Image 1 (tube, helix red, strand yellow):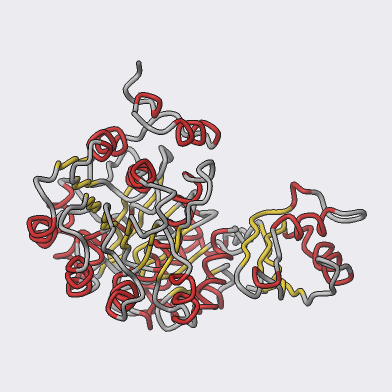
Image 2 (cartoon, rainbow, N blue to C red; image 1 turned 180 degrees about the vertical axis):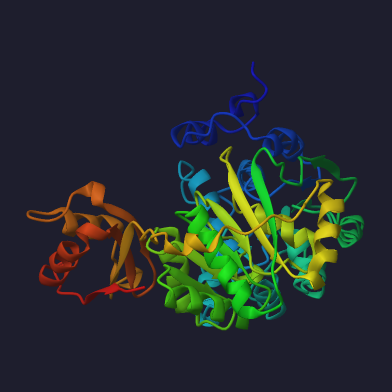
Length: 463
């Protein structure tokens, strides 16, 4: 039997059948190396780049171990940000969809505390959350971990970088000593070794190439003047030269993030900012619009961009070089996923030359500076985004479902189903992406018609 196939593993038939139905046949390297140990009940440290398939590795492990009839918290997955936690919970639910009655609950900061308490009172099998909010629920006695049998620390390096060490320690103190612990990280700084020694028992270490090869991601470095205007001009030149359909621009500060996004928008680019000063609704909307291709460029801080669930990212642009080499690895790992090729362009000043040299040593690559594209590139037309987003003032609490929206759009004299993109439903509102050409008719169809028997306010979100 082919040992790279999921069918070679001792997984429950329901899980195997579901893997086949969602197109998961062959394991990625991190899955093939870690899953046999995970299923054998071993503690595992997995080191692999972002987008390598680690979520399915630990997700299958905890689902295989789960006793569905025992309605207690049996697995806890800790993530550095809400965005990543939402992505992980979504993947676990997808893996578990043929196993009935499994409840996965997310507990993250930035969300109302009361409804989370109510959800905990009703119980759950699997908790996915951020350390700060999970610790708060544990401290208040709302979250009981006495029957936990699997603890997963996902992107542990970022959790430590973000200052979650104390919260992690406090949570782990409330877990049983007899448990399985899995730790996944794209990099392996000394703090990871330290925490592994304290919370894991004879862990198996599996490593997949942590850096990104030039065969997958082409890295380009450009020296620019300290002057802000020159740096912004350089960014515009590179965006026009490469013309990516989808790109993330990383900045080191929230202020730079907003100012760069505003500058790009002022010059006609389809760009949005994502940083910690935004209200949660605005953060959700920015992520939705970028993921559904209504906006081409997302300008973000490292923390805000953590856990971005983007299927295909053409390019990454570093407006400033990251302060730490490990963060640079995370940034460029957003592109070149799932076997596709990607581009990473980094701007640096003379004062930042030492960061480039440090990166070259860390990556064991030659990172020589290149000339910027000529100014004539500024005459290139800006390619508009392919989709537009409509906001519907009705959501999960009003029992709105994707099928309701799709049905209303494609009903008599409506738009074709092929013109409808992603549909995202939140508590009290929903977003649907449609092709730009179909947007006027789609807006008219939803505004003049009815959804679930009611007239509902709909508007187009303009970039």
